[in-house]
Length: 251
Length: 284
Image (cartoon, rainbow over all chains, first blue to last red; front, top):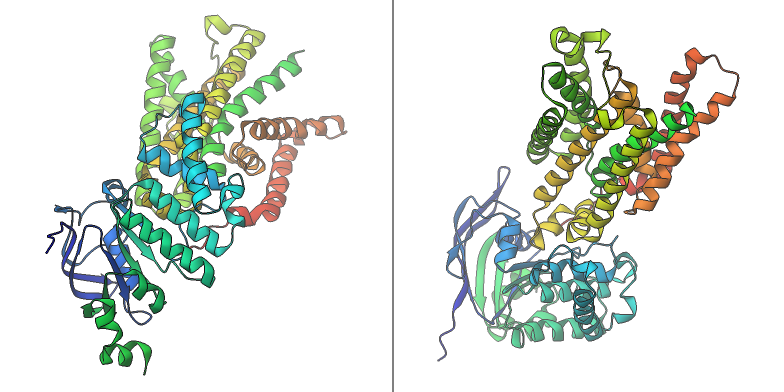
């Protein structure tokens, strides 16, 4: 059996907001190239878990290590620089900026471009070529100069995923990628996430309510209920589990 | 001709002051109201240092360094306070600085101020000063244009939309905000130095709410990240109240009329453009 490297290890995580304990005793690990799905009823702490992993919420107790390094006390932007890339429930693109500018922000950081790159025709062409190629991949080329705010929900998702790809992070934390997305775009999103993981070497943790989408995509599923890890297994194990039907599907 | 040169000089001084408000409030969405403090601080620091025996260039360098320090203090508070708290603090700092100047007679001359401020030898006449201000204003505009084309300019615009999304791309939102505030303070202090060389008299009315009203109006008018828009806004706000001079109002109320004009314009602009300045409610 192939022994894959652990990219993320979460141990005994407790997260408290105000007086309320949102996450209790969460432990799991993610190996390189894996797609882990997180499901659970509303309010069970799925987004809180992603916020904690990306550094936007402080941890009460527990440890989070990324690539063997303790990242518990690092600022969100430092975690992002280390390779923890984040997609948001309400789509983390800058709507008052053009599609092209949204991607430039990622390219500038990932490629460590000098501040004066826009005044160099060679560098401008280089960046333009990258942007044209990635936008063509997701059928957004015609929107290159448009404000991101005019894109549909599905197109915004595609743009966010494209930016995550350009940021070249190792670990993608994606929150409800299919929210407000048409069935045909869901397939496309699924293909893009698979491509990011299989071809570009990313690892992904995806929070999602669309079980069919997630079961087709993920290698492993973690079920959260009331802030605790309720169960964990492969999609086929989880799909057939009677307890999940009871707590999540209400059957 | 003196009147014309004075208006041109006011345009250049206000331009430099407005680049700060453009970067912080218009583009980055930081509600920083400490511009009058920095404007007065620059002028007072330079004049006091020269009065205490420093040569012009040494006094100038020390003033710029002190304004950087003032900017860093504001930046530190920006990192520690909420957006609303920071806005209130910076607004209160205008009143606090005014009280400090009025009460510290031995250093600032109190309410009577400091008179007989001489211009530097290379800008002895008003025309020479206007040329110097013009050169500096052009440099500042070119600097802002370059800044807006750079990754920092895009980060400033992204900061306005969401600090969280900006952090998630690996760019420290608090660092971007701090740099913008420090830069705005230094530019305001520089504008204060140039203004005091024109007026040659310094008292507590030099910086205050009137200046704040004026540049906030410019900041709201020039909300797009374009230098050309900023230049047009400054022209409009500096020159429009001059129309009042052609009406038969007593000269004693002209200053008050100008402030009233800015206030009414600011209210109209804020009402018309308020949606652009309302914080965007986006959740993660």
